[in-house]
Image 1: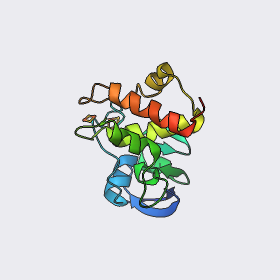
Image 2: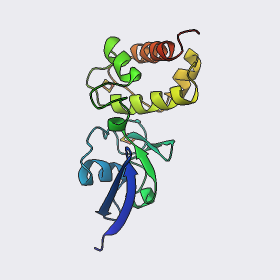
Image 3: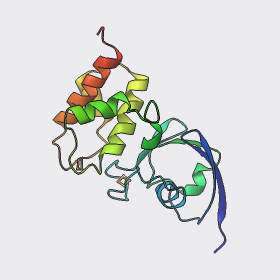
Length: 160
Ligand code: FES
Ligand code: FES
């Protein structure tokens, strides 16, 4: 089968990849580019573990065909940290609140929560729960995750 050339930018780096027409963006990231931070939970668009930003829109990368990423900018969990060694405040707060167990869902929550705080640095609890409704976690019970995002928001906007 002939391969398709995909030219994209991932976490600010140009990536030119040959892929099969049936491969997903999740396959492209993990198998062709080697960024395995993005996880596959369900593979059917139900869990949010594979969440990435595609031209600044949150998408389930298991539902996007790799050729659709041509010419687009992608941000994965590997591109979220503020510096090479540091963590984004959302990641730091998830750690501090012990808001993860197996961690399969965590990259998706990190990407989604960061996207929320970029748009709304001062979200109320209802907004956080609504925004993260597409991200499922079978381990934590959610409360610690919500507290972590609230704490991250507090750190970003300490005067609220
Ligand atoms: S792996 Fe993509 S939504 Fe579950
Ligand atoms: S920490 Fe295991 S699924 Fe969320």
